[in-house]
Structure formats: structure tokens, C-alpha cells
Length: 292
Ligand code: CLF
Ligand code: SF4
Image (tube, rainbow, N blue to C red):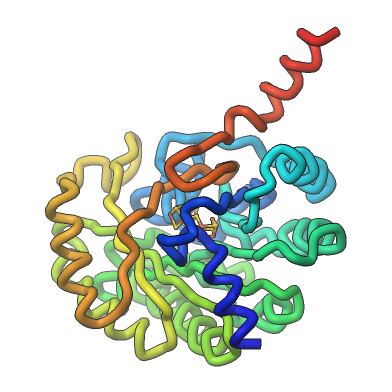
């Protein structure tokens, strides 16, 4: 099993920089979210894995399968199918699961990948293993609930809404439990960390060290792109140099990602060569009309 994952990692452009000629496809089947991050505006895609200000279409599992067929036919280099929003993949688990099952039945050779805030990981960890998902991204911005309380306005779990340190403690506990459980069983886990200046910037190394202890394969420190109308809209920006300095500092502890594109939740193509618009619903409809 672990060998199989190593082979798949070589075909995953986010986890292996040398896999840059392979393409990934996001299926936007997960519109709902179960937490409230202070940098998020739910009019758009989940900022934890996406460029803010982008709104992606939402597809049903059957529509995702239909789109997959079109993309696969036109893009032989397609190797990864991922669910990265536009909300949280596990807050919409029935849709996420069904989409993966439908695509897997046709193309068992695909690498399947999920991105999540991690709140529901312990609930779904067995399903994740059984579904044959090999790669997982969890966003963990803090490993200290005092810092987490500044980042998460609300954590909604089993019908109860928690805030402050109580919410941040619950979220962290479940993120780390899921990370540890799945890493120990061979799932290749990346941890995304948003660099929030004045909030978690002096805490990044600690986050990296703790997630490493719980089995993370690599971390991806991402710049925050502030979104209007959110509590963090006025946080200072980080330039590329500062960001890479943080990454280099943390690389002493764990492998770092330097090539993240902060893609949309309906991204299609190789990293840096996005072709999502070409496969968007509107574009396909327009092409059908003009060919009549
Ligand atoms: Fe998508 Fe994320 Fe899987 Fe990649 S993206 S769910 S791990 S297949 Fe990749 Fe895009 Fe960066 Fe994400 S470049 S935002 S790290
Ligand atoms: Fe927004 Fe993503 Fe945070 Fe949910 S997890 S509140 S979608 S940034």
C-alpha cells in the first residue's frame, strides 16, 4: 500500500514538483462549509485552498462525472482528481464520496485527493481509506487555541456552534487526530498554513513541528490575499521574499511546498497552466450554441 502511494505521489503535481507535466482536475461538488474563518467570504471559494474572489460553479456528482469524461478525453496528462470546495469537502461528504466512486468506477488509475479544514476527519477517516483516496490536504493555521480563537469565528459541530478557544480547541483536536490516523495508514498528508501577519507569523515553526509529529508529509505556507468584507481584510500583505523566508526557515523541520498556485475549486490543468475556463459549464454551452 505504501509503495502504491509513493508511485501516486510521483504523479501528483502538488506533492511532487517534478510532476509538473501531469494535470489535476478539481470537481466543485462541495458548496457547504462547517466553520467560519475570519479571512473568508462565503460568496467565493474556500480560501484555504483557493485564490480569494473566485466563484466556481457547483456540480452534482453526475455532472462531475460528465465533466471528468470531457477533460480526460482532451487531457491525457490528467492524473489527479481533487475535491477542494468551494466549501469543505467533508462538510459535503455524501456528494464528495459519490463523485469519487463514479469517477473511480471508470478510471481506477486516477489519483484521488481531498482538501479539508479537518473538522470532520475523525468521522470520515474510515471512508477516506476505503474510498482509495491517497492524498489529503488539511488546513491547520494554529496549534495553540489562543491563536486559533483569533482565526476562527465559529466552529459548527453536530448542531452546536462553538466560538473562541472552545471552537479552536475542538477543531485542532479533530485536525490532529485525523492527520495522525490517516498518515499512519499511508495517506500522504499535506498541511496548508495561511500566513496571517500579526496573528500566526511567529507561530509558523511551531505549527510545522507539531504537524510533523502527527505524520504530515509536507507543509504549504500560503500568502493571505485579503478579501473585502472579512475581519482580516486589512491584515498586512506578505511579499514573495518574506513568504519564502518563512518557508526556508520551516524547511529545517519538514519538506515545504514552494509552487502552490492557490487554484480555484474548479481548476483544471497543469499547475501554472490553468485551463478551467475552457471546461466551464458556460464555455461548453456557448460552444454548443455557436456550432449549431
Ligand atoms: Fe487540488 Fe490541493 Fe489536491 Fe492539489 S491543489 S486538492 S493538493 S489536487 Fe495544489 Fe492548487 Fe496549491 Fe492546492 S496548487 S491550491 S496545493
Ligand atoms: Fe471559508 Fe474554507 Fe474557512 Fe470554510 S474552511 S470558512 S470555506 S476559508
